[in-house]
Image (cartoon, rainbow, N blue to C red):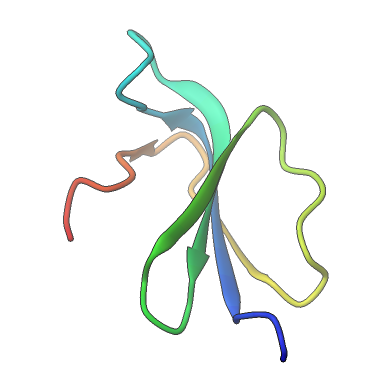
Length: 67
């Protein structure tokens, strides 16, 4: 069984429900169905080599806002 195709959105301003201020984080999403698989706080690291990485820079990311 192969791993799902992954898209990773990385940004320095990710707003999470358990934080008062935006943080640096990566959101790992299944490219197959758009499901958020994980949120990794901190700098971009440990991402699968075949994942597509989208760097949002200083734009604000709100994971899960639109389903």
